Amino acid sequence: MGHFLRCALAAALLAAGVPGQPWAGEAGDVILAQRGPWALEGRSLTWDLTREGPALPGFLPIGAGTLTMAEATDPADGKRVLQLTQRTDAGERRIGPFPLSAGDPVAVFFLESTVRDMAALTGGNPDYIRNRIKDAVFRGGSVAHAEGRTVATVRPFAADPARGRMGAFAGLTLRVEAGADPAAPLRELVAETADPVAPAALRGMAGRPVAPARYRNALVLR
Image (tube, rainbow, N blue to C red):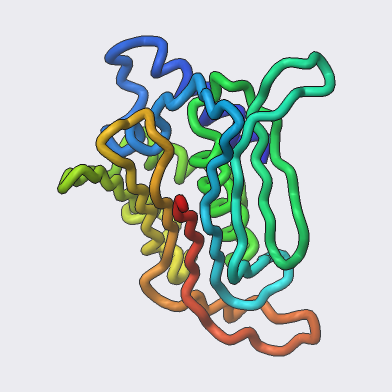
C-alpha cells in the first residue's frame, strides 16, 4: 500500500498548501480533500467494511469487517499519530502510522485496496491500474450536490485503450460521499462493477472454474 499512500497523500497535501493549484478536478478535491490536521481527542472513527467478488486466490471477500481510525503514540519518537485497523473474520491488521496532518488515510486505503483487488481478479498490472485510477481521481470524474451531501463519481477506465481486456472492470465506478463540510470524514466509499466479473482465464486452487460475481468494495461510516 505504500506506493499509493506516498503519491496520493503527497499530492493531496501539496494541493491543500497551494490555493487554486490545478492538480485535480472537482471529484479529486472531494475524495482527497485535506482533512488534516486530525483531532480525534480520544475518539475513534469506524467504517463498516464489505468486499465481494469471485472466489479467487489473492482476493479476500469480507462479509462484515470494520476499518477504524484512531490516534496512537508512535513508539519510535513518542509523537501522536493516526493508526488504521482493519478487522475481519480472517483477523486484525494494522495500517500506518500516519501523521495527524495526513489528508485522508481512509480514502487512500480504499483506493489502494481497489487497485489490489482488480489486479488479483484480472491478472492485470497493479502499477498500470493504480496509475489509471490516480489519473482519473486527480483529473476527471463528476460531482453532484444535494440535501447536504456531496457525491463524487469516477469511472477510471471509461476511455482506457486497454478496457477491452478488463472485462467487467472496464465499467468500474468509484463513488464517494461527503457531507456539507469537506473537512469532515467521508461518509461512504464504494467501488463496484455493474456486471459480474468472469475471470475465464483464472481458476481456483483445485483447477476448477470460478463462478462469476459482481465486484464491490465498500466502506460506510457508522
